[in-house]
Amino acid sequence: MTTPDTQRPRAGSDILRTALRRNVGAMAGGTVLMGLYQAGETAFPIALGLIVEHTMRHRSPEALGVSVAALAVIITTVSLSWRFGMRILQKANTTEAHRWRVRVAGAGLQPVAADVDLKSGEVLTIATEDADQTADIIEVVPLLISSLVAVLIAAVALGLADVRLGLLVIVGTVAILSILSVMSKRIGSSTREQQARVARAGAKVADLIIGLRPLHGFGGNHAAFRAYRRVSTDAKRQSVTVARVGGVYAGTALALNAVLAAAVTLTAGWLAFEGRINIGELVMAVGLAQFIMEPLKLFSEMPKYVMIARASAERMALVLTAPPVTTPGTERPARGVGLEVDCVRHGTLRKVRFRVPAGEFVAVAAYQPRAAADLAAVLALNVPPDAYEGTVRVGGRDLADLAVEAVREHLLVNPYDGEIFAGTLRSNIDPSGTSRTVPEAVEASMLTDVVALHREGLDYAVRDRGANLSGGQRQRLSLARALAADTDVLVLRDPTTAVDAVTEQLIARGVAELRRGRTTLVITSSPALLDAADRVLVLDDGVVTAEDTHRRLLATDEEYRLAVTR
Image (cartoon, rainbow, N blue to C red; front, side):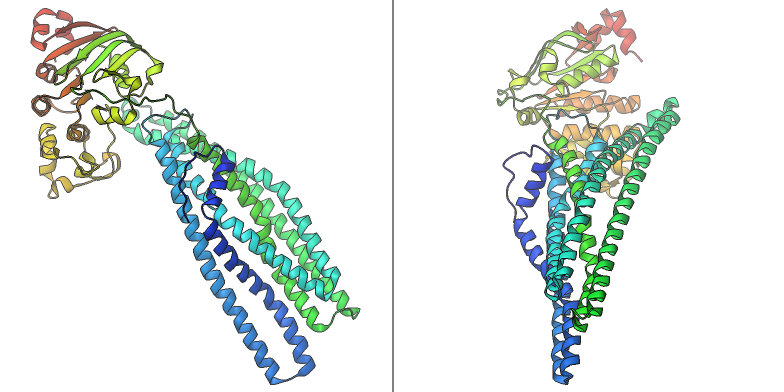
């Protein structure tokens, strides 16, 4: 039932075709069973008409018994076909939605960012709601076909009684679908806009949650809440518009279906009054006129669901078809991995040049916080190599020539605000469960007191974003995760800003000891970390202005002493 994705979808229509193609088997089985269900439903009023006519003509208990048995077979067929048909279709629908959720999430988590103007909250909405609505096409097509089967059976049965009744059903159905197909286009455009606005609101609230503490710190939370209220209000208004359009569509469909059913009933009554059809055929026609409203309702709703699925697929295509910001290379670093920054110019950096040989522990004292952030962004590949001047080399190879997997394997840049995930202390330190240095990392990062506080130890439950941890505990947990990764080159940016001086001193010694013989670069203003480093680079006004040990710089450089002494 599954086929591998060998090609990346290019547009929303390609995504829908892919979903349909790899679920052909499930859709075929579901269509057959749902067709049996609709055929059984249609056969019920037909059988009633035949029973009435046959019973009135022959008036025998045997004929009545056969008729009851026939009705039992029809009812059993209807029940079982619906049960198993919907089971097949819903399983395929759920599985397909899962596949697209994984693909969208995978695209969003690629190490090379995609060139798409979407925030993480918008990607989340696409990976959930849009993936689910796109997968609905798996159910829509079989239900559409089975509804068409029911309408055709009803038209044929009525046509056999009188050709005018059959033509009335066919012409009425075509007219209804023509009117509703025009209206469904408005639903599709409105739905696309609604999905975009809801996604923007989701992205805004995600940003608010992440930045809530600093917003409270400088009193910007009220302004941020007002901004979110505006975005949310826009989403609400568009949702109301979509609901209004959907209500008009549903009301129009119901009214048109009722008109057609009434027309069939009145026409059948007139034909019976004229003696052109018998009583059994009249009963059948009246029953079919009532029954036909259900498949017609389902049939008329399908264009709406198709437009919604297409709109969602087009939004998924924004993520899945977006080209990478940069094209990574294919090489791997040479042995004896060191780090070299050669004349890099980006943001506040102005031809920064330095080298960290393999196995050395180097600290960078950046006088301007912006320069520290720019340097970390360049090393972390948050800035594509072709977006800045100069070269960064890992293991003697240009960063632009290396495969992303090779860079991630040999170089880790721990972010300043490392994310904490819901789980346990252990799962945050070692997400893959393969690290052999978890105890050493916990010791070096001074996370030992957090572990000792709780009876569960490393299995202590951590809430989303580390809500049940203090700022210092979250920072030490992030540092422990970076140390447990045990990469050849480790870059840390301000890893001790949220801890006290004593703990900071212990962390500096622990990191230096644990990373002995491994290449380590720490961007920091911490005297303890600067003193633990083999040498210190002073980054001032975008260039390296001095280089020596921490203690010699303290003794010879007044500006350095004032900048780092606290």
